[in-house]
Length: 388
Image (cartoon, rainbow, N blue to C red; front, side):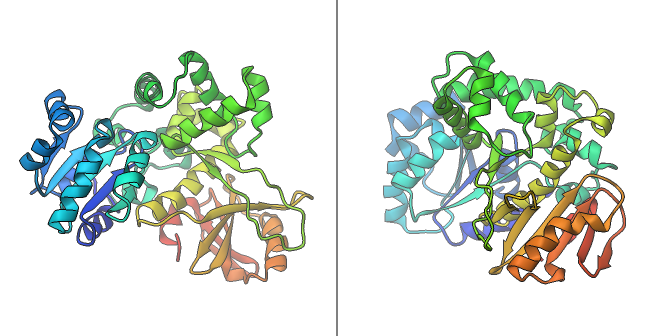
């Protein structure tokens, strides 16, 4: 098994809370991680009909059978169990009693907030980060390869080609999860909606444009986006709200949690296609920003990430809040560095009073540089600089 960076945090939280909840995209490795990190724990999956029926029909009997040190997987399938868990852990008052796992955030989080608030730590496991692949000696040679393959563990564990993995993943997700999360009558239309979202990676979210192209109401677009967010398919990067005496863009940008999934939705069949693809820049930007998202989540933090764009077109792709101050990153998919890459950052830095050491360019080259305007970082060395 490939070591996961989140493991230390997972075990640490088990020493502080009676329950630890691990969520994240389907097939991101939650079950494998919990079994590996907690070998002395019982493992029960609510996918198993017998276990699920016992938990539904006799929750007290279920907890008597598994009173302590138990992993309960796909726990969102038995929502009534949460109230009994609350009573049980309160009476026992011990840490590390249960680890819960689930991928359907729409179903999981309401039950946690109602019954287990204050009793559980909540962690999120994403697909492999570049750093995890590098530490396992599985890092791919080029950014195009990494964009195309994405980070889902099964691709690397079972050596499955992305074109075989992702179409099946999408079909399973739509047929299984979407049916449970929302009453969407036309699933083919929903798949088309996801594909349209993939075509807007790195762009400002325009709800009206999506609604017009799909022939649906803006409210339906908002509802469907909430499904994609709750199931860890997409996320929205919000604009920075520090005005700095400038009129700012207020719309968020749209990104995918996994670039391999996005490539499949865009019908990209191999990594070489990316070199000339119209979304090459957006996908590279998505790949880089995902590393910041994963680094934060796998450390148990909330990603404090925004972007900045003023009304005259000056822009910074990513602002990262670290220990009370912001670091600025401009992301360029080209392999050649130019001092012009600092144009937007210099405008922002002057307005915000940010020093050059907190201004960075991340690019597709292989040479790190320190210049008067800031730092220049190759994309594959990014793991060395995250949140430092």
